[in-house]
Image 1 (cartoon, protein in one colour):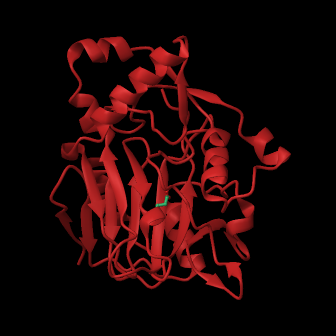
Image 2 (cartoon, protein in one colour):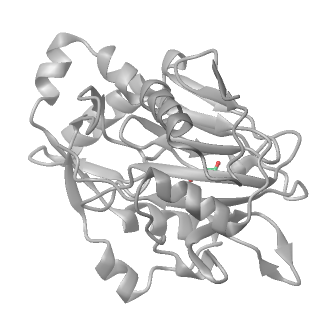
Length: 284
Ligand code: SIN
């Protein structure tokens, strides 16, 4: 039988008694979905999934979209992008430096991802954790004058802003192609978004893809962004998730941001994760 335990901290729920390799019945799915809306990050341990089963479950959460870096799709399954630091026969198994900075998935598109699903096939006993910050709680924790100041402001998000910096810093990534650049022009989103299902407000900016604030001069925009990032990353809003093999974790990109920590992972410690991205709606 399905059972739920809140993770101690500002977000997260562990669900047991649910085997995602079988079709989840509607009653159990409703329980999972309610927990997702309330706790933002859901973890289901001990799964053994084929690509089809991961895709089937992810589709219950919404339509899937292939990631822009098609070179890292799982062969035959464009819905799955492989995240991995493993190199076999001189070939990387996947994207080694995915999300090693605070971000909200696909915030650089007009319709960002609503939900991200990760399935851990191989993870180290130590390291390779994923960090989360609860941006609804962070919004609630702002002063009234700051909430007034943010009301109506739009932030500018862009993929190349981060990708090109990583390409220079790590040398792992190749520059974006002309087609990839054309697919990712800068977009704007409200700094405070209203959740499409619960109606609750959350901050919606992230150090990864937010490059400025519309209508503010660059120094003023950067200084406001930094103040908000420092606020969101206070320990009371953050949680560090430690992976076990077989974990499926999915989260709500409308209410949390996250960061991988693989930039500090010993390259000898193998990590292999499959990820699907569930489409979302335009933030309002
Ligand atoms: C991601 O940003 O989706 C990757 C997170 C991780 O690998 O820990």
